[in-house]
Image (cartoon, protein in one colour):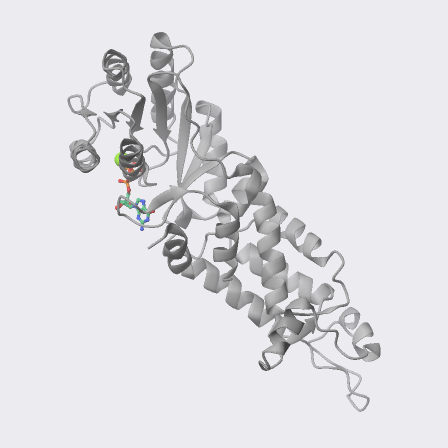
Length: 351
Ligand SMILES: Nc1nc2c(ncn2[C@@H]2O[C@H](COP(=O)(O)OP(=O)(O)OP(=O)(O)O)[C@@H](O)[C@H]2O)c(=O)[nH]1
Ligand SMILES: [Mg+2]
């Protein structure tokens, strides 16, 4: 199955929330003003009514005309007014797109469409276009440099998917002919080392480990020495998950970076922040915190399968503009792929 089909299948909770939300908003049109209708209409604000009364025949949009040719039943339409925009905004905020982004996206959709009767397909397409426009500049695969070893430091809060992402990336780089070394920088949990060793075996990549409780910074340094000696293309350093509010753990991360730089002042060449899509808006504060400590160069968003909070990726792109290198849609080795803005936008709105 192609990654896009998988994305479309697995993004269902986000896309059904947004897609169904758009259908509902259009279906939720205030009752058309009839000459005999009573003056008081509790559900429709006054502003929503004025054009309805003078509206001539509904103008089908391009999509409407295309579908009409197939003699499909006419798609429900609703006149785009302030009330409808407000519903759209609320729906996008509920889908974790963030208030600022939702406002801007809604304003752009309104442009040139106010007062027109539009159907859900036009609305979905317009939303997908807006999302793709925000996401296209950040859709950039992990850059590869001629520098050997290229040091990739992977950071993030507990359970965000760091270790899994390293396993998936290592296996993909290996398949692309790169030599990779992994450093198991999570020296707190024995299980973490075992987990990485399993991924290493699957990917056919050596995993450097250190005794439990030892200093992860010194393991990182040793791993750099080894990767250099072996002429490896990439060194991926896993780190222990850390809560944003644990100053000691955050300081430890800063130390890893300092020690790596003693060996190579230009390292780490990439600092990947792994974010769990199911955390929704909290991902935004994670980016802020980790950026202060480590020079975060790009993001990986995991667990887009089975969450209705996929909209957070749009908020992240809009707010920080950090490259999104890859997205994860499952636990298997091939459930991670480069981020494609257009595919993501279409999948997210349920097109
Ligand atoms: N459904 C789904 N699960 C994922 C994805 N990525 C990771 N996981 C799962 O999330 C859980 C945590 O992943 P890990 O890779 O161990 O996370 P971590 O950031 O290394 O965790 P700590 O080392 O404890 O901080 C595991 O059960 C993974 O299988 C994904 O894209 N989709
Ligand atoms: Mg881990």
